[in-house]
Length: 606
Image 1 (cartoon, rainbow, N blue to C red):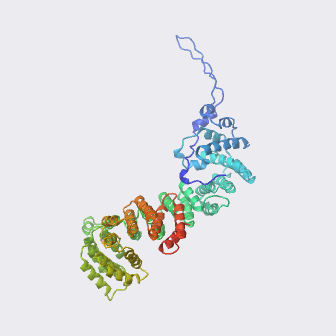
Image 2 (image 1 turned 30 degrees about the vertical axis):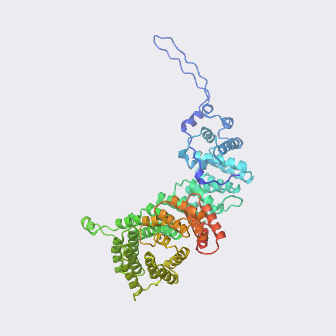
Image 3 (image 1 turned 180 degrees about the vertical axis):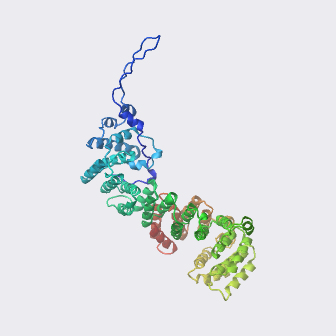
């Protein structure tokens, strides 16, 4: 019985039969002797007839199927000798490289040399497509799995080699044969090869796309098969070499329906490469992946669609999406580079006569100012913040003033930062809640070493639920209670993301947190996040694994395990491993933030 295999292990394909070889096979077994040639002044020499040598015998390699192939008839309607040869070749290929069929191998034809034995079999098959369909149907109805596979092997070999093109205009076509092949494989059941046949059917006949998608959906859940729908979709995504965007679009839709997001991403890229996509479709996919947390997928899709060449209004929407994603990925250098490329100077516009693109929105200005601050350029951030303050659109005017206080802290001006926060707190025109202001006031107190005042402010900030700062205030309160050592606290809090320092400075301070202490695992988690931002996922995964195994705090160990599983989701074959880790977390820890994260990821992956 065939078993599901990862598509990455697909073999290479069959090459067509060389025309010269077919001509040699058709040569007569005896050649006439040449005429005598008389040379002047020399004796007459008569050529001797040479016994002919069978070309098939000289070309065919030694093997278990050699004798069967040499005795095959040409174009006979009795399938018995062809089925016997197909069974032998199928066993030979299964021993050599696992269970493979000719069409599956042809998908990687460029990587595979011609095989004389296969070529000879294909050359001697009947050319009529009706012969194939008739015997496929007869053997399928007999429920003989072995003979069904042998007949399917013959049919695929004939189709791959392109034999049988000389047929009546109203006779069976390749589409009909692939439809019958899919029925044979579903009867076995072998949904993988059935899906390959269905995809080729949709490729050859555009009117069958909806029908094929329905059949593929049924094949994913064929009774009696092994594996999961997502595993089968991953195998098809890796194995099928798309020639039109139609099949990639079908697989992408199936991947979305079965929550196979990595598979949907790969098929979307293939679809974009084959035919491109309208900006509305591509940006809609970006929005989907962004809501699921696959920000790296979003970035790759935007680059693939070459969004910088789009006309308005798509250009503005794509630029906004690109900056949002870079902000979420914390790609600060990339965000600044994007901002510089999108805003040419006024002098350049005057010299070249080009039209200046529209200015940055308040949200984009906030992203740019944050990136400048994270890169250790607080003075440049203040310049951008002044531009943001003039617009004063909720909530970006409010966010800009909070960012201004952070820049003043980074410049070593805690007094100015305190005045900015107090002024914002007592602003009568403010529409936002007070919780974020209290949180940043507590961060200022922590940076100055005023831990008692910071704790009181954090208690007040955590009461304003519904904002990111309120949740972060609860984390800070937990850290303050966890370790009260005066020498360790500054090292830890100066390494947190809210600290007014660059990533390099924060990483150095976190590495100084002593191992074995209660704050060490949380310092390592923050260090791993910095490694992810710097493009070192392997190092970050190693830190997460170490914390999961060595942390004395169960909460930190569970957080590390969840984050390691999230990294593993996007690795080849890591989907099921990540799903198992999330389910294990639910068993170990039944309340709190981490189980909710695990439940969300399990729902997304299933």
